[in-house]
Length: 195
Length: 90
Image (tube, rainbow over all chains, first blue to last red):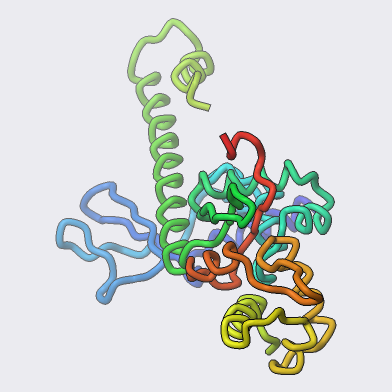
């Protein structure tokens, strides 16, 4: 893909009028909100109707689902591969999953437990006839999963938005105050240890 | 739409309790709208997951299968790890 093609794609993405989501801004304060589902009558801020944002002035890079899952939930591609391999197949042993995906069984188990930690799967222990137990990894309710992943992602996006706001405030503060160090040093000192 | 493995397992448990004898993939294929190969594959996988045990030339459901059905999870995503690692056992 050429640079021109990339610019064109990003430019199209910047027109928000036909997007699945909506971004609204308050004309009285600096509040900006993101929603996937408009309420009747639109969004409001302190009782006033908010204005739908139709353009983005900054080029944005279209998200890649693998990167989104990794950044927001710490779920690498193998975790997603496991989900896609198993869904709708009925009970499977980890060995079959490992064989189909060409992973080690230990890798499959590690990612299954990661999916449990994230909250995308539940883990139950069932009795076995010769003593001991088997682990069963199963999906949570689909409606619950949709809600939890969306809220989880919004929480992550909120954290990201707070970081961007802090970055902007750091720049403003630097310009207003008399710092001896360069902006570059002040900026990265502020965010040291957050990444 | 083909019969889901979950429904097949439900059938095996219910039928075993009704007739009180081991079942074969051929029994399932004859009673349900499912091909012999599909029934074979499902029974084999159920056995790998320790949901069915081989007995007298057929299969019977294990206590694990009954507990799995009691969990009331469907076919969306189910992995049965019959060899959990040592950390889980301790």
